[in-house]
Length: 585
Ligand SMILES: [Zn+2]
Image (spheres, protein in one colour):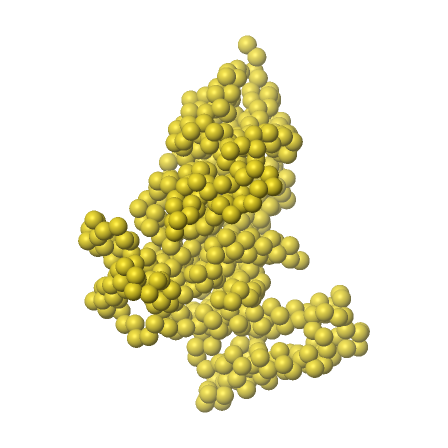
Protein backbone atom coordinates (compact mmCIF):
# COMPACT_ATOMS: atom_id res chain seq x y z
CA UNK A 1 0.00 0.00 0.00
CA UNK A 2 1.27 3.41 -0.92
CA UNK A 3 1.89 6.08 1.65
CA UNK A 4 0.36 8.71 -0.57
CA UNK A 5 -1.56 11.52 1.07
CA UNK A 6 -3.58 14.33 -0.42
CA UNK A 7 -3.82 17.96 0.44
CA UNK A 8 -7.15 19.39 -0.61
CA UNK A 9 -8.82 22.77 -0.78
CA UNK A 10 -12.49 23.40 -1.45
CA UNK A 11 -13.80 26.92 -1.93
CA UNK A 12 -17.13 28.47 -2.69
CA UNK A 13 -16.70 31.86 -4.29
CA UNK A 14 -16.98 34.73 -4.73
CA UNK A 15 -18.68 35.16 -1.38
CA UNK A 16 -18.05 38.81 -0.69
CA UNK A 17 -19.76 40.07 -3.82
CA UNK A 18 -22.57 37.56 -3.35
CA UNK A 19 -23.25 38.62 0.23
CA UNK A 20 -22.92 42.31 -0.56
CA UNK A 21 -25.52 42.20 -3.28
CA UNK A 22 -28.04 43.55 -0.87
CA UNK A 23 -30.80 46.06 -0.81
CA UNK A 24 -31.76 45.73 2.82
CA UNK A 25 -29.45 44.97 5.70
CA UNK A 26 -31.16 41.64 6.34
CA UNK A 27 -30.09 40.50 2.84
CA UNK A 28 -26.53 40.60 4.17
CA UNK A 29 -27.30 38.38 7.13
CA UNK A 30 -29.12 35.97 4.90
CA UNK A 31 -26.44 35.81 2.23
CA UNK A 32 -23.86 35.17 4.90
CA UNK A 33 -26.00 32.45 6.43
CA UNK A 34 -26.35 30.72 3.06
CA UNK A 35 -22.56 30.61 2.60
CA UNK A 36 -22.05 29.43 6.12
CA UNK A 37 -24.59 26.64 5.69
CA UNK A 38 -23.03 25.53 2.41
CA UNK A 39 -19.57 25.18 3.95
CA UNK A 40 -20.87 23.58 7.12
CA UNK A 41 -22.83 21.11 5.04
CA UNK A 42 -19.77 20.15 2.99
CA UNK A 43 -17.70 19.66 6.13
CA UNK A 44 -20.39 17.45 7.64
CA UNK A 45 -20.51 15.29 4.53
CA UNK A 46 -16.74 14.85 4.39
CA UNK A 47 -15.78 14.83 8.01
CA UNK A 48 -15.19 11.08 8.30
CA UNK A 49 -12.99 11.07 5.24
CA UNK A 50 -10.79 14.13 5.73
CA UNK A 51 -8.69 15.86 8.38
CA UNK A 52 -9.77 19.47 8.38
CA UNK A 53 -6.98 22.00 8.92
CA UNK A 54 -8.96 25.10 8.13
CA UNK A 55 -11.48 26.25 9.27
CA UNK A 56 -11.46 25.24 12.87
CA UNK A 57 -14.05 22.52 13.41
CA UNK A 58 -13.70 22.22 17.16
CA UNK A 59 -16.73 23.46 18.95
CA UNK A 60 -16.42 27.09 19.93
CA UNK A 61 -18.45 28.57 22.74
CA UNK A 62 -20.46 31.69 22.08
CA UNK A 63 -21.05 31.23 18.38
CA UNK A 64 -23.82 33.61 17.46
CA UNK A 65 -22.95 34.46 13.93
CA UNK A 66 -21.74 32.96 10.71
CA UNK A 67 -18.07 32.71 11.33
CA UNK A 68 -17.29 29.97 8.89
CA UNK A 69 -15.03 31.12 6.06
CA UNK A 70 -15.55 30.14 2.44
CA UNK A 71 -12.59 27.81 2.26
CA UNK A 72 -11.86 24.32 3.57
CA UNK A 73 -8.26 23.09 3.72
CA UNK A 74 -7.78 19.45 4.59
CA UNK A 75 -5.64 16.36 4.17
CA UNK A 76 -6.57 12.81 3.32
CA UNK A 77 -4.13 10.44 4.93
CA UNK A 78 -5.25 6.89 4.33
CA UNK A 79 -3.61 6.61 0.96
CA UNK A 80 -6.72 6.45 -1.14
CA UNK A 81 -9.79 8.45 -1.76
CA UNK A 82 -12.93 8.03 -3.65
CA UNK A 83 -13.23 10.43 -6.56
CA UNK A 84 -16.97 10.02 -6.64
CA UNK A 85 -17.29 11.61 -3.18
CA UNK A 86 -15.99 14.89 -4.52
CA UNK A 87 -17.98 14.67 -7.74
CA UNK A 88 -21.03 14.10 -5.62
CA UNK A 89 -20.33 17.16 -3.51
CA UNK A 90 -19.67 19.25 -6.58
CA UNK A 91 -23.05 18.28 -7.97
CA UNK A 92 -25.11 18.52 -4.83
CA UNK A 93 -23.60 21.19 -2.58
CA UNK A 94 -26.70 23.37 -2.77
CA UNK A 95 -29.27 20.64 -2.36
CA UNK A 96 -29.69 20.61 1.37
CA UNK A 97 -29.12 24.33 1.76
CA UNK A 98 -31.44 25.80 -0.81
CA UNK A 99 -34.93 24.92 -1.72
CA UNK A 100 -35.64 25.69 -5.37
CA UNK A 101 -36.05 24.30 -8.85
CA UNK A 102 -33.15 22.98 -10.94
CA UNK A 103 -32.81 26.01 -13.22
CA UNK A 104 -32.39 28.33 -10.25
CA UNK A 105 -29.98 25.95 -8.55
CA UNK A 106 -27.87 25.64 -11.70
CA UNK A 107 -27.77 29.42 -11.98
CA UNK A 108 -26.80 29.81 -8.35
CA UNK A 109 -24.01 27.29 -8.86
CA UNK A 110 -22.59 29.65 -11.47
CA UNK A 111 -22.78 32.54 -9.03
CA UNK A 112 -21.43 30.66 -6.02
CA UNK A 113 -18.99 28.37 -7.70
CA UNK A 114 -17.56 25.40 -5.90
CA UNK A 115 -13.97 24.71 -6.83
CA UNK A 116 -11.73 22.04 -5.39
CA UNK A 117 -8.25 20.72 -5.81
CA UNK A 118 -6.51 17.61 -4.47
CA UNK A 119 -2.74 17.43 -4.63
CA UNK A 120 -1.00 14.14 -3.81
CA UNK A 121 2.10 14.20 -1.62
CA UNK A 122 4.15 11.72 0.33
CA UNK A 123 6.45 13.56 2.63
CA UNK A 124 5.27 15.94 5.38
CA UNK A 125 8.49 17.84 4.86
CA UNK A 126 7.02 19.03 1.57
CA UNK A 127 3.83 20.33 3.15
CA UNK A 128 4.59 23.97 2.47
CA UNK A 129 5.39 23.43 -1.22
CA UNK A 130 2.31 21.28 -1.65
CA UNK A 131 0.14 23.85 0.06
CA UNK A 132 1.45 26.64 -2.19
CA UNK A 133 0.95 24.43 -5.22
CA UNK A 134 -2.64 23.70 -4.24
CA UNK A 135 -3.41 27.40 -3.78
CA UNK A 136 -1.76 28.17 -7.10
CA UNK A 137 -3.68 25.49 -8.99
CA UNK A 138 -6.92 26.47 -7.35
CA UNK A 139 -6.51 30.10 -8.38
CA UNK A 140 -5.78 28.89 -11.88
CA UNK A 141 -8.91 26.77 -12.02
CA UNK A 142 -11.01 29.66 -10.75
CA UNK A 143 -9.56 32.03 -13.28
CA UNK A 144 -9.82 29.82 -16.31
CA UNK A 145 -13.03 27.91 -15.81
CA UNK A 146 -15.24 29.20 -18.60
CA UNK A 147 -18.55 30.56 -17.42
CA UNK A 148 -21.10 28.10 -18.63
CA UNK A 149 -23.14 29.15 -21.61
CA UNK A 150 -26.26 28.83 -19.52
CA UNK A 151 -25.48 32.06 -17.72
CA UNK A 152 -27.17 35.20 -19.02
CA UNK A 153 -28.76 33.13 -21.69
CA UNK A 154 -31.60 31.59 -19.79
CA UNK A 155 -35.09 32.64 -18.92
CA UNK A 156 -33.94 34.31 -15.70
CA UNK A 157 -32.44 37.13 -17.76
CA UNK A 158 -33.85 39.66 -20.14
CA UNK A 159 -33.17 38.82 -23.75
CA UNK A 160 -30.30 40.84 -25.10
CA UNK A 161 -31.37 44.18 -26.43
CA UNK A 162 -34.73 44.26 -24.73
CA UNK A 163 -35.51 47.07 -22.40
CA UNK A 164 -35.24 46.11 -18.80
CA UNK A 165 -37.73 48.11 -16.84
CA UNK A 166 -38.45 45.07 -14.69
CA UNK A 167 -34.99 44.24 -13.40
CA UNK A 168 -34.42 42.94 -9.91
CA UNK A 169 -33.68 45.67 -7.35
CA UNK A 170 -30.90 43.66 -5.71
CA UNK A 171 -28.78 42.32 -8.58
CA UNK A 172 -30.05 44.67 -11.28
CA UNK A 173 -29.41 41.94 -13.84
CA UNK A 174 -32.13 39.36 -13.82
CA UNK A 175 -35.85 39.72 -14.44
CA UNK A 176 -37.88 40.44 -11.34
CA UNK A 177 -40.64 37.88 -10.95
CA UNK A 178 -41.04 37.81 -7.18
CA UNK A 179 -42.23 40.01 -4.32
CA UNK A 180 -44.85 42.30 -5.75
CA UNK A 181 -44.84 45.79 -4.30
CA UNK A 182 -46.77 48.78 -5.62
CA UNK A 183 -47.89 46.74 -8.60
CA UNK A 184 -44.35 45.82 -9.62
CA UNK A 185 -42.17 42.80 -9.04
CA UNK A 186 -39.02 43.59 -7.08
CA UNK A 187 -36.80 40.53 -6.96
CA UNK A 188 -35.51 37.87 -9.32
CA UNK A 189 -35.65 34.19 -8.42
CA UNK A 190 -32.04 34.12 -7.25
CA UNK A 191 -32.21 37.17 -5.02
CA UNK A 192 -35.57 36.07 -3.72
CA UNK A 193 -33.93 32.94 -2.32
CA UNK A 194 -31.71 35.20 -0.29
CA UNK A 195 -34.53 37.46 0.84
CA UNK A 196 -36.63 34.49 1.92
CA UNK A 197 -33.82 32.61 3.63
CA UNK A 198 -34.44 31.76 7.22
CA UNK A 199 -32.41 33.59 9.84
CA UNK A 200 -32.94 34.44 13.47
CA UNK A 201 -36.09 36.47 14.02
CA UNK A 202 -34.17 39.48 15.28
CA UNK A 203 -32.14 39.68 12.06
CA UNK A 204 -35.17 39.07 9.92
CA UNK A 205 -36.76 42.23 11.29
CA UNK A 206 -33.80 44.54 11.42
CA UNK A 207 -33.11 47.61 9.32
CA UNK A 208 -30.45 50.30 9.16
CA UNK A 209 -32.79 52.61 11.06
CA UNK A 210 -32.49 50.28 14.06
CA UNK A 211 -28.74 50.84 14.18
CA UNK A 212 -29.20 54.60 13.91
CA UNK A 213 -31.65 54.57 16.80
CA UNK A 214 -29.31 52.59 19.07
CA UNK A 215 -27.69 55.95 19.83
CA UNK A 216 -30.97 57.08 21.41
CA UNK A 217 -32.45 53.88 22.80
CA UNK A 218 -30.86 50.68 23.93
CA UNK A 219 -31.14 47.78 21.55
CA UNK A 220 -32.93 45.62 24.08
CA UNK A 221 -35.59 48.28 24.63
CA UNK A 222 -36.24 48.55 20.89
CA UNK A 223 -36.38 44.77 20.76
CA UNK A 224 -38.91 44.71 23.61
CA UNK A 225 -41.13 47.10 21.72
CA UNK A 226 -40.96 45.03 18.54
CA UNK A 227 -41.81 41.90 20.53
CA UNK A 228 -44.81 43.60 22.10
CA UNK A 229 -46.12 44.48 18.63
CA UNK A 230 -45.77 40.95 17.42
CA UNK A 231 -48.47 39.70 19.75
CA UNK A 232 -50.68 42.72 19.33
CA UNK A 233 -50.67 42.88 15.56
CA UNK A 234 -50.88 39.19 14.85
CA UNK A 235 -53.93 39.58 12.67
CA UNK A 236 -52.96 42.88 11.18
CA UNK A 237 -51.58 42.89 7.65
CA UNK A 238 -49.73 46.16 8.28
CA UNK A 239 -46.31 45.95 9.81
CA UNK A 240 -44.59 48.58 11.88
CA UNK A 241 -41.70 50.08 9.96
CA UNK A 242 -39.04 51.36 12.34
CA UNK A 243 -38.06 54.02 9.80
CA UNK A 244 -41.34 55.66 10.78
CA UNK A 245 -39.90 56.60 14.16
CA UNK A 246 -38.45 59.43 12.07
CA UNK A 247 -41.36 61.79 11.33
CA UNK A 248 -40.05 62.63 7.86
CA UNK A 249 -40.67 59.02 6.82
CA UNK A 250 -44.31 59.27 7.88
CA UNK A 251 -44.68 62.58 6.05
CA UNK A 252 -43.58 60.87 2.86
CA UNK A 253 -46.33 58.26 3.02
CA UNK A 254 -49.53 58.98 1.07
CA UNK A 255 -51.46 61.55 3.09
CA UNK A 256 -54.08 60.07 5.42
CA UNK A 257 -53.66 56.65 3.89
CA UNK A 258 -54.31 53.58 6.00
CA UNK A 259 -50.58 52.98 6.04
CA UNK A 260 -49.80 56.48 7.27
CA UNK A 261 -52.39 56.30 10.04
CA UNK A 262 -51.08 52.92 11.13
CA UNK A 263 -47.43 53.98 11.20
CA UNK A 264 -48.30 57.17 13.05
CA UNK A 265 -50.06 55.15 15.71
CA UNK A 266 -47.09 52.80 16.02
CA UNK A 267 -44.70 55.71 16.25
CA UNK A 268 -46.63 57.18 19.16
CA UNK A 269 -46.67 53.81 20.86
CA UNK A 270 -42.94 53.50 20.31
CA UNK A 271 -42.23 56.88 21.88
CA UNK A 272 -44.61 56.12 24.78
CA UNK A 273 -42.84 52.83 25.34
CA UNK A 274 -39.50 54.63 25.46
CA UNK A 275 -40.78 57.33 27.80
CA UNK A 276 -41.96 54.65 30.17
CA UNK A 277 -38.46 53.20 30.09
CA UNK A 278 -37.11 56.56 31.16
CA UNK A 279 -35.91 58.02 27.86
CA UNK A 280 -36.50 61.65 27.11
CA UNK A 281 -36.88 62.74 23.51
CA UNK A 282 -37.75 66.40 23.41
CA UNK A 283 -37.21 67.13 19.75
CA UNK A 284 -37.39 64.95 16.67
CA UNK A 285 -34.03 66.37 15.68
CA UNK A 286 -32.50 64.55 18.66
CA UNK A 287 -33.15 61.22 16.98
CA UNK A 288 -29.92 59.89 15.57
CA UNK A 289 -30.10 59.27 11.83
CA UNK A 290 -26.60 57.86 11.34
CA UNK A 291 -25.02 54.50 12.11
CA UNK A 292 -21.58 52.94 11.73
CA UNK A 293 -20.64 50.05 9.49
CA UNK A 294 -17.40 48.32 10.45
CA UNK A 295 -15.32 46.21 8.08
CA UNK A 296 -11.92 44.79 8.77
CA UNK A 297 -9.65 42.50 6.90
CA UNK A 298 -6.41 40.79 7.97
CA UNK A 299 -3.23 42.18 6.39
CA UNK A 300 -1.22 39.78 4.20
CA UNK A 301 -3.12 36.76 5.48
CA UNK A 302 -2.45 34.69 2.35
CA UNK A 303 1.28 35.13 2.89
CA UNK A 304 1.07 34.32 6.58
CA UNK A 305 -1.05 31.19 6.13
CA UNK A 306 1.20 29.83 3.40
CA UNK A 307 4.32 30.31 5.53
CA UNK A 308 5.71 33.04 3.31
CA UNK A 309 5.63 35.90 5.76
CA UNK A 310 8.71 37.02 7.66
CA UNK A 311 6.64 37.64 10.78
CA UNK A 312 6.53 33.86 11.27
CA UNK A 313 9.41 32.17 13.06
CA UNK A 314 11.57 30.20 10.64
CA UNK A 315 10.71 26.81 12.09
CA UNK A 316 7.00 27.36 11.47
CA UNK A 317 7.47 28.32 7.87
CA UNK A 318 7.96 24.78 6.68
CA UNK A 319 6.87 21.15 6.82
CA UNK A 320 4.60 19.74 9.45
CA UNK A 321 5.20 22.78 11.67
CA UNK A 322 3.48 25.00 9.14
CA UNK A 323 0.49 22.70 9.30
CA UNK A 324 0.51 22.99 13.08
CA UNK A 325 0.61 26.77 12.80
CA UNK A 326 -2.28 26.77 10.32
CA UNK A 327 -4.39 24.75 12.73
CA UNK A 328 -3.53 27.01 15.65
CA UNK A 329 -4.27 30.09 13.57
CA UNK A 330 -7.63 28.82 12.38
CA UNK A 331 -8.66 27.95 15.93
CA UNK A 332 -7.52 31.34 17.24
CA UNK A 333 -9.33 33.09 14.40
CA UNK A 334 -12.62 31.36 14.94
CA UNK A 335 -12.52 32.05 18.68
CA UNK A 336 -11.62 35.66 18.04
CA UNK A 337 -14.39 35.92 15.45
CA UNK A 338 -16.93 34.47 17.87
CA UNK A 339 -15.84 36.79 20.69
CA UNK A 340 -16.06 39.88 18.52
CA UNK A 341 -19.50 39.04 17.20
CA UNK A 342 -20.79 38.29 20.68
CA UNK A 343 -19.11 41.39 22.06
CA UNK A 344 -20.95 43.79 19.79
CA UNK A 345 -24.35 42.14 20.25
CA UNK A 346 -25.59 44.61 22.90
CA UNK A 347 -25.31 47.48 20.39
CA UNK A 348 -25.04 45.94 16.93
CA UNK A 349 -24.68 42.81 14.82
CA UNK A 350 -22.00 41.04 12.86
CA UNK A 351 -22.81 39.91 9.33
CA UNK A 352 -19.79 37.66 9.32
CA UNK A 353 -16.90 37.35 11.68
CA UNK A 354 -14.50 34.67 10.56
CA UNK A 355 -11.47 36.02 12.40
CA UNK A 356 -9.58 37.39 9.44
CA UNK A 357 -12.48 39.34 8.04
CA UNK A 358 -15.45 41.07 9.54
CA UNK A 359 -18.51 43.03 8.55
CA UNK A 360 -20.93 44.46 11.06
CA UNK A 361 -23.15 47.36 12.11
CA UNK A 362 -23.27 49.29 15.37
CA UNK A 363 -24.93 52.35 16.83
CA UNK A 364 -22.79 55.46 16.44
CA UNK A 365 -22.67 56.01 20.16
CA UNK A 366 -20.97 52.63 20.55
CA UNK A 367 -18.36 52.98 17.84
CA UNK A 368 -15.60 53.56 20.35
CA UNK A 369 -16.65 50.62 22.48
CA UNK A 370 -16.83 48.40 19.40
CA UNK A 371 -13.32 49.26 18.20
CA UNK A 372 -11.97 48.93 21.73
CA UNK A 373 -13.51 45.51 22.03
CA UNK A 374 -12.22 44.31 18.66
CA UNK A 375 -8.71 45.59 19.38
CA UNK A 376 -8.62 44.00 22.83
CA UNK A 377 -9.88 40.67 21.52
CA UNK A 378 -7.46 40.77 18.63
CA UNK A 379 -4.57 41.34 20.97
CA UNK A 380 -5.43 38.58 23.42
CA UNK A 381 -7.11 36.22 20.98
CA UNK A 382 -4.67 36.39 18.08
CA UNK A 383 -1.34 37.97 18.87
CA UNK A 384 -0.94 36.86 22.46
CA UNK A 385 -2.17 33.38 21.69
CA UNK A 386 0.08 32.96 18.66
CA UNK A 387 3.12 34.73 20.09
CA UNK A 388 5.13 31.49 20.17
CA UNK A 389 4.84 31.27 16.42
CA UNK A 390 5.73 34.86 15.64
CA UNK A 391 9.09 36.57 15.64
CA UNK A 392 9.76 39.00 18.44
CA UNK A 393 7.97 42.34 18.02
CA UNK A 394 5.98 41.03 15.08
CA UNK A 395 2.23 40.81 15.05
CA UNK A 396 -0.67 39.89 12.86
CA UNK A 397 -2.42 43.07 11.80
CA UNK A 398 -5.61 44.09 10.07
CA UNK A 399 -7.03 47.10 8.28
CA UNK A 400 -10.34 48.72 9.05
CA UNK A 401 -12.85 50.60 7.01
CA UNK A 402 -15.50 52.28 9.10
CA UNK A 403 -18.31 54.06 7.32
CA UNK A 404 -20.67 56.44 9.05
CA UNK A 405 -23.79 56.80 6.96
CA UNK A 406 -27.35 58.13 7.06
CA UNK A 407 -29.89 55.35 7.52
CA UNK A 408 -31.56 56.34 4.24
CA UNK A 409 -28.40 56.21 2.13
CA UNK A 410 -28.73 53.12 -0.10
CA UNK A 411 -26.95 50.20 1.52
CA UNK A 412 -25.30 49.23 -1.77
CA UNK A 413 -23.63 52.61 -1.89
CA UNK A 414 -22.45 52.37 1.72
CA UNK A 415 -20.95 48.94 1.04
CA UNK A 416 -19.24 50.12 -2.13
CA UNK A 417 -17.73 53.13 -0.38
CA UNK A 418 -16.68 50.90 2.51
CA UNK A 419 -14.76 48.61 0.14
CA UNK A 420 -13.20 51.58 -1.66
CA UNK A 421 -12.04 53.05 1.63
CA UNK A 422 -10.56 49.72 2.69
CA UNK A 423 -8.61 49.53 -0.57
CA UNK A 424 -7.39 53.13 -0.12
CA UNK A 425 -6.35 52.28 3.42
CA UNK A 426 -4.39 49.22 2.31
CA UNK A 427 -2.74 51.18 -0.50
CA UNK A 428 -1.38 53.93 1.69
CA UNK A 429 2.34 54.22 2.11
CA UNK A 430 2.66 52.38 5.42
CA UNK A 431 -0.29 50.26 4.54
CA UNK A 432 -0.50 47.74 7.40
CA UNK A 433 -2.51 48.16 10.57
CA UNK A 434 -4.46 51.17 9.36
CA UNK A 435 -7.95 52.53 9.65
CA UNK A 436 -10.07 54.67 7.38
CA UNK A 437 -13.16 56.35 8.76
CA UNK A 438 -15.50 57.65 6.08
CA UNK A 439 -18.37 59.96 6.87
CA UNK A 440 -21.01 60.11 4.14
CA UNK A 441 -23.12 63.23 4.53
CA UNK A 442 -26.85 63.15 3.85
CA UNK A 443 -26.17 64.78 0.48
CA UNK A 444 -23.55 62.19 -0.43
CA UNK A 445 -20.27 64.00 0.21
CA UNK A 446 -17.40 61.88 1.50
CA UNK A 447 -15.02 62.81 4.29
CA UNK A 448 -12.23 60.33 4.89
CA UNK A 449 -9.68 60.28 7.65
CA UNK A 450 -6.81 57.79 7.76
CA UNK A 451 -5.34 56.73 11.09
CA UNK A 452 -3.07 54.03 12.41
CA UNK A 453 -5.01 51.48 14.45
CA UNK A 454 -2.94 52.11 17.53
CA UNK A 455 -3.98 55.77 17.33
CA UNK A 456 -7.71 55.23 16.93
CA UNK A 457 -8.29 56.88 20.31
CA UNK A 458 -7.05 60.16 18.84
CA UNK A 459 -10.45 60.82 17.35
CA UNK A 460 -12.15 60.21 20.69
CA UNK A 461 -9.61 62.38 22.51
CA UNK A 462 -10.37 65.15 20.05
CA UNK A 463 -14.09 64.60 20.61
CA UNK A 464 -13.47 64.97 24.33
CA UNK A 465 -11.83 68.35 23.76
CA UNK A 466 -14.60 69.45 21.41
CA UNK A 467 -17.05 68.66 24.19
CA UNK A 468 -14.91 70.47 26.76
CA UNK A 469 -14.06 73.93 25.52
CA UNK A 470 -12.47 73.51 22.10
CA UNK A 471 -14.33 74.99 19.16
CA UNK A 472 -13.80 73.38 15.77
CA UNK A 473 -13.50 76.85 14.23
CA UNK A 474 -9.71 76.60 14.15
CA UNK A 475 -9.80 74.18 11.28
CA UNK A 476 -12.01 76.41 9.17
CA UNK A 477 -9.58 79.25 9.79
CA UNK A 478 -6.63 77.09 8.87
CA UNK A 479 -8.40 75.99 5.72
CA UNK A 480 -9.17 79.57 4.78
CA UNK A 481 -5.76 80.94 5.61
CA UNK A 482 -3.39 78.54 3.98
CA UNK A 483 -4.47 78.40 0.38
CA UNK A 484 -3.59 82.10 0.32
CA UNK A 485 0.06 81.14 0.61
CA UNK A 486 0.30 78.01 -1.47
CA UNK A 487 -1.64 75.31 -3.24
CA UNK A 488 -1.87 72.74 -0.46
CA UNK A 489 -1.33 69.09 -1.24
CA UNK A 490 -1.15 69.61 -4.97
CA UNK A 491 1.99 71.35 -6.11
CA UNK A 492 5.45 70.71 -4.76
CA UNK A 493 7.06 73.49 -2.80
CA UNK A 494 10.59 74.59 -3.48
CA UNK A 495 13.48 73.55 -1.24
CA UNK A 496 13.35 76.94 0.38
CA UNK A 497 9.57 77.12 0.78
CA UNK A 498 9.03 73.65 2.21
CA UNK A 499 10.69 74.03 5.63
CA UNK A 500 9.39 77.57 5.95
CA UNK A 501 5.77 76.70 5.24
CA UNK A 502 6.02 73.51 7.25
CA UNK A 503 7.04 75.54 10.27
CA UNK A 504 4.41 78.15 9.58
CA UNK A 505 1.70 75.48 9.46
CA UNK A 506 2.72 74.23 12.89
CA UNK A 507 2.80 77.71 14.28
CA UNK A 508 -0.57 78.63 12.84
CA UNK A 509 -2.19 75.40 14.01
CA UNK A 510 -0.96 76.05 17.54
CA UNK A 511 -2.09 79.67 17.48
CA UNK A 512 -5.53 78.88 16.08
CA UNK A 513 -6.10 76.08 18.61
CA UNK A 514 -5.28 78.58 21.34
CA UNK A 515 -7.82 81.01 19.96
CA UNK A 516 -10.45 78.28 19.74
CA UNK A 517 -10.03 77.54 23.43
CA UNK A 518 -11.20 81.03 24.35
CA UNK A 519 -13.89 79.88 26.74
CA UNK A 520 -11.38 78.18 29.01
CA UNK A 521 -10.46 80.51 31.87
CA UNK A 522 -7.56 79.12 33.80
CA UNK A 523 -4.57 80.18 31.77
CA UNK A 524 -2.13 77.53 33.09
CA UNK A 525 -4.46 74.71 32.19
CA UNK A 526 -5.24 76.35 28.92
CA UNK A 527 -1.61 76.33 27.83
CA UNK A 528 -1.32 72.64 28.75
CA UNK A 529 -4.51 71.73 26.96
CA UNK A 530 -3.46 73.71 23.92
CA UNK A 531 -0.18 71.81 23.70
CA UNK A 532 -1.94 68.50 24.23
CA UNK A 533 -4.36 69.17 21.38
CA UNK A 534 -1.62 70.53 19.18
CA UNK A 535 0.55 67.43 19.71
CA UNK A 536 -2.43 65.22 18.96
CA UNK A 537 -3.39 67.01 15.76
CA UNK A 538 0.00 67.84 14.36
CA UNK A 539 0.40 64.18 13.34
CA UNK A 540 -2.49 64.53 10.93
CA UNK A 541 -0.89 67.19 8.78
CA UNK A 542 0.53 65.22 5.89
CA UNK A 543 4.04 66.39 5.23
CA UNK A 544 5.96 64.67 2.52
CA UNK A 545 9.53 65.86 2.48
CA UNK A 546 10.30 63.77 -0.61
CA UNK A 547 8.01 65.64 -2.94
CA UNK A 548 7.75 68.65 -0.60
CA UNK A 549 3.97 68.63 -0.33
CA UNK A 550 1.95 69.65 2.68
CA UNK A 551 -1.72 68.84 3.06
CA UNK A 552 -4.18 69.44 5.88
CA UNK A 553 -6.94 67.39 4.24
CA UNK A 554 -6.59 64.44 6.61
CA UNK A 555 -6.53 66.77 9.62
CA UNK A 556 -9.57 68.68 8.36
CA UNK A 557 -11.51 65.44 7.89
CA UNK A 558 -10.51 64.21 11.34
CA UNK A 559 -11.88 67.38 12.88
CA UNK A 560 -15.00 67.28 10.69
CA UNK A 561 -15.85 63.71 11.70
CA UNK A 562 -15.04 64.29 15.38
CA UNK A 563 -17.32 67.32 15.31
CA UNK A 564 -20.14 65.21 13.85
CA UNK A 565 -19.69 62.49 16.48
CA UNK A 566 -19.27 64.70 19.52
CA UNK A 567 -22.91 64.88 20.56
CA UNK A 568 -22.97 61.11 21.10
CA UNK A 569 -19.94 61.22 23.38
CA UNK A 570 -20.91 63.94 25.83
CA UNK A 571 -20.26 61.67 28.78
CA UNK A 572 -17.15 60.06 27.41
CA UNK A 573 -13.98 60.58 29.41
CA UNK A 574 -11.48 59.11 26.97
CA UNK A 575 -8.99 61.76 27.83
CA UNK A 576 -8.83 60.90 31.50
CA UNK A 577 -7.61 57.38 30.99
CA UNK A 578 -5.69 57.81 27.81
CA UNK A 579 -2.67 55.90 29.02
CA UNK A 580 -4.47 52.66 29.67
CA UNK A 581 -4.69 49.82 27.25
CA UNK A 582 -2.06 51.12 24.91
CA UNK A 583 -0.82 48.04 23.14
CA UNK A 584 1.94 47.29 20.74
CA UNK A 585 4.82 49.49 19.68
ZN1 LIG B 1 -31.69 39.61 -8.45
